[in-house]
Amino acid sequence: MPDVPEVLTAPLVVEFPFTRSLGPVQSAFLTGLRERTVLGVRTGDGRVVVPPTEYDPVTAEELRELVEVGSGGTVTTWAWNPAPRRGQPLTTPFAWVLVRLDGADTALLHALDATGPDAVRTGMRVRVRWAAERTGAITDIACFVPDDGPAGEGLPAAHGGEFTDPVTLLTAPARLDYTYAPGRAQSRYLQGLSAHRIVGERCPSCRKVYVPPRGACPTCGVATDTQVEVGPRGTVTTFCIVNIKARNLDIEVPYVYAHIALDGADLALHARIGGIPYDRVRMGLRVEPVWSGDSRFPDHYRPTGEPDADYDSYKELV
Image (cartoon, rainbow, N blue to C red):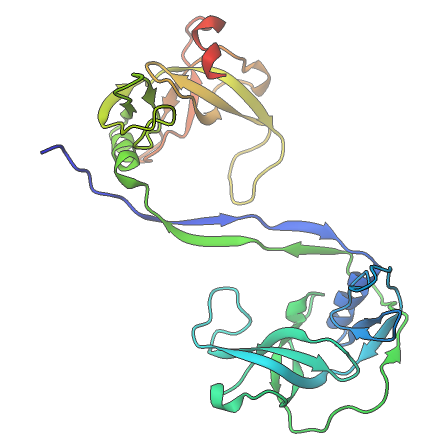
């Protein structure tokens, strides 16, 4: 029986918050929320769109005429959320609702704090519950709550969109949480790294050795079930200089990230280069891994002091 490794699993988070600038309409809307004011925008045919858009959704005409609408409204449709997830507006079960605010012709999506699905219905009246601390974001509306009051009267009031210290930038979080299972081939590879060994797999057809292994040859499409220890030394085939500091990554910039062809491997892997000034890293540089403490992975690769490799020895891996 071949050795079957324990298949590993681990939680993995992919997170990429980004910041964008705001135009006059979006800036006024978010600043208004900070000031407990809900703004919409009037289209050419007189409809009031909330949240406001910068262009008419029908004609694509640019929109600038801001109006203030009410903080109360009517539920047009809803869905119950029995198990809130990380980052959602409420930590207890709630309803997602589309609310047409008084004076608006479109509906706003947000959370409704209700005791249960039996307490929610289409056509019910609700009002905004404002967040205690407001920063100029949609979360300044903490949620909606049921309201027994009558519908607001009158037309939406014109608003100049002018506020003190307007919000001009928006940071939008993007995050994906999932459990990663590397499979048997990469589990062998990861378990080898724990012992400071780098193990690839050889294709039985073309005889190429792949590191990290994927369980199959990408060229021949056949299973790679023969383990081969490679490296640990290798050659820098190509590289880039990183000048922007990543969030939650304790590495000072600038630093070098490189493709490294390990001795005996037919596929370059990528890793950080350390132990040498960033402007002295070059193609052909001979490097070796450096483990720190009980880390499973090499912290970085450093120069070995050997002469640079000849270009012909790694040109197929650039």
